[in-house]
Image (tube, one colour):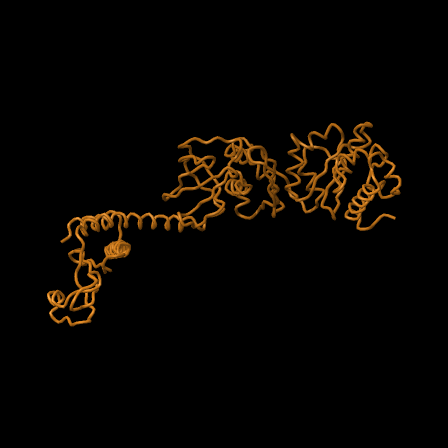
Length: 422
């Protein structure tokens, strides 16, 4: 009985729950691989482990000859008959050729092989546990940092990775801290399952609302869109499929408790709850609230919404660093251009507005827009109505540049109106 190997096998059976035959086959396979690697200029061996005694033997196949020239592949007739009295010349026979210390090597190999198989089994189990959970929110604790990536311990021995793009820029994490995160994807890699986590993903906010607002989870209400700048502000557009349920009020909750719970989880990130509408004008108005809009003009071909507001409402509509306008644009999927009412503008503001409009046209840009406006061309229509000679008369504009600017205006006009101005 190979007592050392037997102790390893029994431990693996008892403590790890690995089947005995699986263990023995794994050890045989590992020993066979080791023997094969060492077979250059040596005997080619076949390894066998006795299932009862766990004794290990290695057998070499050799040709029976009169005179041995290759001791690794040949055996003399006399020596062959000591192992097998019926051996004949030129016959291939197997003889035992077990290397020294093969039992001790087997025990070490067993430990390494089984531990490797256990690790592989654990990785497979983790992947099976998590492969269908993309889109869920999970809770874990920060284990370590790998540069800017946060490694998070999850249930069942799993590890999640939250790389820099999935982190919230305003949040700092500490080892051991409990945090919640959104599962973006689960991939089966050679090194093990890769669970990608995020706290900055817009759907993290979506799932928090689904968990907090029962009317969303039961289908009475629906989230139609989310625009997010993680750590700062999110806009969530909701609609109710039951006219008796106010979608905004349901999301806010009694005394604001529902939305407060979500804001608390997001560490103070502001949440704007917007009533959804299929009417783009109404949706923009809802999204830019509480700013009071004077007019909303929709340009379908270019997917642009132009919003006009009084001077005292401009900063409120645009938001800090343009955030309100930017999130509204993300939410509706259209470009949103917010401008001050021209009637309330002074001369300098009107000039700046005209420059901005022309500069936005591909092929013109800020420098040439400024020259055109100061030469009296304040709009696309004005450019289209001009003769090339009028443009060439402007300082620094060559005939070639005049043609280029006119073509750029023509292209923009066609995109907006579907026809070329006469």
